[in-house]
Image (cartoon, rainbow, N blue to C red; front, top):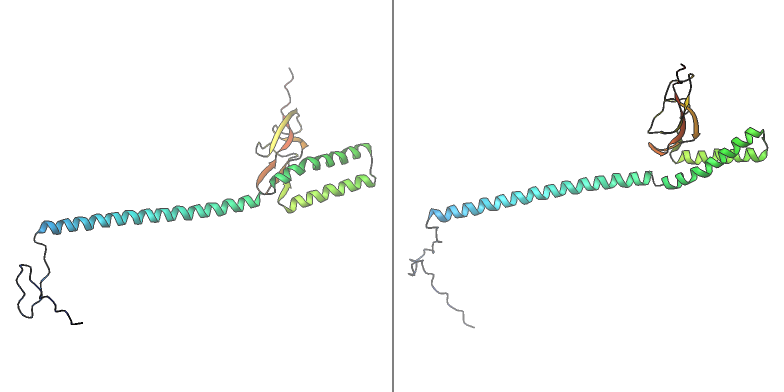
Length: 192
């Protein structure tokens, strides 16, 4: 196939360019076009900056979400055994009541010793899982740890002191699993 000849380049006015000269690109003929291009550039830069700010904000929000999710997941794992532990407290209370009743009647037989051993084992298992008893006897009343069931007028202890633990309270790590049900001292009534 024969090679096709190139058409001669033409200048912007339609006349062929002089020998050896190249066609010059068109230049903006007015400063208004240049101003319009600058405005478009500024608008594009402004839009870019807005999208960059939005992307950075979304990234920070997502990182915060990940941190919260990890913290919530760790806390959920830490307190996962809470419902089971709470359900075990009732039977543990009954075993303790049984041994207390046996002591009151003077029984110290093998059965009582066995029940005491089971109570000790249960308390040890609970302790290994971060569950501990709330020390309440003789302590100042704390509504965050204790549930006052009754008041006992007494001059032997200052007012608002736990005089008797009616039902043992328990903590799981730093949360209250079950508040201790207690009797609280009150100032004795003044005699007339």
